[in-house]
Amino acid sequence: MKLEDIIKENLAGDAQENALEFIAYLRDNEIQLEKIGGYWDGKFYYGASYNGEFVCFILIYSPASAVDSTEPWVIWSDDSGSKWFADHPLDEKFKEIAWKNAGVCGNKTDTACGGCPSIGGQPKTIFGKNFNNICGTTFCFKNPNGIELECLKKLIDIRKNTI
Image (cartoon, rainbow, N blue to C red; front, side, top):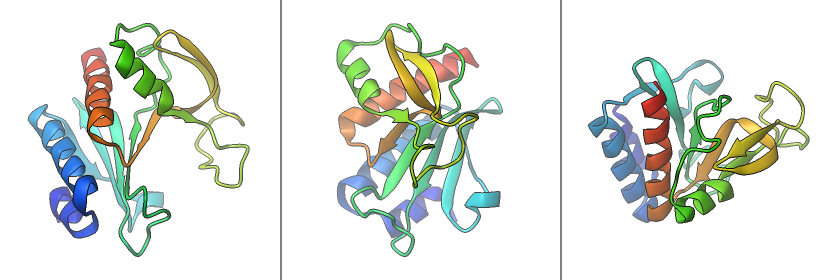
């Protein structure tokens, strides 16, 4: 089943419209989408890659598995451990959005994903601002709106240009 069909079956309203627009953007930019198995088997979890390297990950919650119906889909950036986002020039409004969606590590909480190499995440500089506790996936956009998707596209363009 195509990701677009999964979106149409599991999301509604603005979430569906935004998700479909985002997937169209990825496809238009030669970004490949592949369903990821393993731990994610049985879930609608996709990796988005360009020239064999991930640029982001997408999770579409089905109604039966939805943790929080106000966040029916989530996009994580790739493991941005390098300095791709440290001082890259970006419009101030997009910097604010990126900072707001910085993936603070949950490894010290009961809801930890366990993906961080060390407890509590790691320090990262994101567009000139220092953070102490950032997950391996630098950004986490939960049910992004239109302006957040524009920011996310810029982040993906930055990542794509590093590949």
